[in-house]
Image 1 (tube, rainbow, N blue to C red):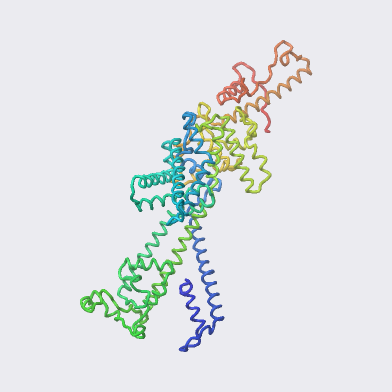
Image 2: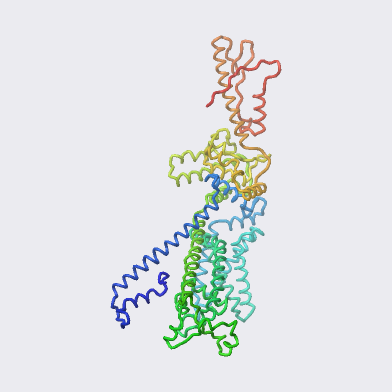
Length: 640
């Protein structure tokens, strides 16, 4: 009973004053013995064993949750790749406003203003000062100038929030109302307009309107959580816990309902002691009162006093000069008229039904209820909250990667057209992947990989020009590519971000690429269907595969290197035989014909060849000899 910390101090004082059986207690007679005993008991029983049971329940809950959410046949990289694609394709919009180059100059200026980080910081400062101002309201006014100054400052801050809302609505138009925080700000401003209109055009102070406006002004303080990441994580943990708490609350409601019905059946006619806890505010007269009584007891409040009041039998009441009707005689269904004539239907005074001559039903009832409801259900609530906190505290890497992509994309696409030429898209992928892999290397303390991650695609940031040499990309990263290019040579933001996530998941390792390919047979039917539906809506269909361009460029270069090497070898042999002499363009044979230089793998304007150009050149140079012509005897290049 006292292990729930209910009344343990009173029991300790009574034990410290005790002397012997049927002997008057003496103040602090056994103070040191019983005080030390109860302190140690509370420490080990409540602070250790009870909390240990909490830990066991939480651990078991998290184990079952992780078992249900984990796919045993999938590796960590495969799990992360599935989460990354779902998180990417679930986003309805990546940017609040796109195609900025089509906007009027004034609207674009307003957009750049409201999206600037210093503008947001100024609004946060205004919210803090406005909240501080609300806390300084004093009635009556301490000085004649205090109330006018207070009202002027209120109007000033209202003007700041009103101008903020107007600028955002002008810049974003209907996109303004797609953000939940913007909707909240709009309601706050609207409430302020109503309050100001009432105060200006009416001499009556409407208390209800003022209270609502004050609530909105105070609630605006929640916007600060967007700027403080750690506070936002705790708040998001609470938000994430609410849906899960619904399931636990449903079980708790079921337990309270069952024990409420059982309590009414057992204790609805029990006598209420004059000086007991079982009285007007806590009883089992009907189901609703029993439900409220049990809910109060679930917090550990006075449950033992209710148990002791219900445990009193006829002898206990007679000892204190009171009485109760025997439970066998008090049967409302059989002798209702008799009980009504004695005024016992409104104020019943029956003794609780005994079991084998002992009044043990209240003890069994309350002990089982406290164990099930207080120790199990409430600890399960703690487990759900801790689980939500863990989910909110650790930001998933795919969320951070997508936010980084959205931030870096504005550097290459200032107009936010959500598409880039292939060369700029490759520079974007190179920069973002370099940051992601370098950050992962720092977290894993793998310093020897940092230098390599700065040049993951074969070129550095300084070499990111209008023409990117895709042929210089290392093959281990080329195999990671699954990028679609539109017929006009453009790459969308969704496809580029998907490629960044793919490289981040695989870390440029060929083995990881093989893992994330063909995952559908490892996914359950629901997840596989969801992925196919999302990819069909967001992923670019058709177009050309960047891997074809990389492979064709590398094959073409290797073939030309082999031809140049073979031609040099042939020239050297013919020079030794005296059949070649130097000419104006390369070398000339003895019959006057010249040997042309090896072709370059670049176009006339110095840019990288397109996929069509590479395919045409490859077909021209690698085409079989015509009929009747002698077949070349060139051997293929060696590996490496």
